[in-house]
Image (tube, rainbow, N blue to C red; front, top):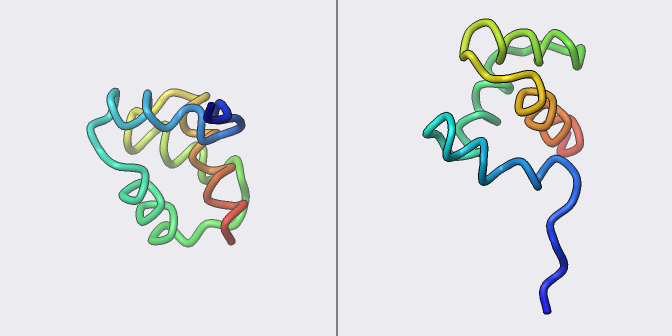
Length: 67
């Protein structure tokens, strides 16, 4: 039996369904923004892409974990 997905990745199916873009597209947005602080990245996603706080936070957490 597969383990349930935990952490930021648990939001990914909902993010892709709600906003119509794959997670890789959001990672490219964050890369292009060239911001350093977590909350600056969250604010960018919320204000410029109308992403909810929880989803934006999950995307940023995943992005920063990969860096």
